[in-house]
Image (tube, rainbow, N blue to C red; front, side, top):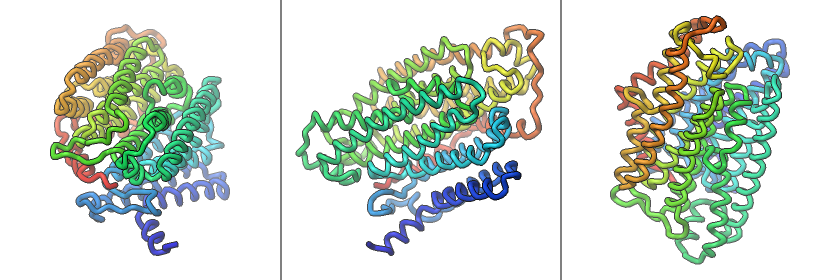
Length: 503
């Protein structure tokens, strides 16, 4: 065994090491100082902040963000590159926001005695997601997904306040077990044919041409089912509405952003590393003709966005509506991958940057209102914008951004997505996506109608936010508006990170 190579590999996964040490610190602190649980969010936030700083320093100083010099770690299991670093930043930023989110939601406060377990599971999810973004071996991809999934199964039913919490966890683990089994069977078929689970070696095997296309296609569809489950695309989305509605709202927000980001990162890398023969001068990926990825991705993305948007039209529960909205957004982002080009991947990075702030912002405002009303039903929002103007304006801004209307950040995300589609001459697909955006406008505007055009009832309260909650909302709302007008820093950062994909 090459110990020098092992030491070099360990030196290049500092962010994952810090996350692991923070997880260990949370466990030990909870065991030894069980009467000081209020400090656990501070330990979690400190660990995440340190990890984020280390990740940004490495991204800007080690050189892999700016040059085609990447590192393959642990004997071909991991790849260190700017693409993975981008998604790690997304995961870490969303995790930091969720730590504060968790500290102020009533659902988690009612489970105060189990706060140590809560943050331990959160960090288990984060560690799994961090490895997912860099994995280039099918075995490590599977193990990373399982680490993420096992933690999230427990968190989905963590509070046990209502029956729907247990139902959410049970449905999640059943669907997750089925998708995991399908994925593992697909990986076994790939290994049986290629003799390796490494994506680079898989690419070399595909180039050789000695493939049983039927068996190979079945294996890829089974593996895609595992990815589809994590990113909530149809027809692998059935768990999403029930789990999002039943899980603690902080976990719902976390799953809708961080887990989805990790899923997209690993799916993009799987196709880019495993199947692309070369990238032409216009940035389009030229894939080996063993499987029609573009047709599959286009069909799945259209099905996902259409089903998500039309299902959201009939929802009365706001968490459930946002769950279907999240499914629709997964469909939009999958179109960026369906383009099979650097421009399409770049559009996904830009989209995720803005989706992070507007989606967590929407869930946070819904949580504050639910803390006061004890309800997430849209009909209970009558006149709420007039009684609580700050929360009404903030929620309205986030919903308008989720729709993709100017001058919000959501418009910029969809703009780059449509640019990628037009560049690829996928005009019909772009029109379908545009029509879906029009459909989404209806159910988002419905909430605004309830808040501003319906008369408040005697039970409609005036919801006052604390100074910290106000600052938190502004941290999310101001960029949502500012990036709709001045988005160059985010676009430049995404361009830098997509400039070199690694292996």
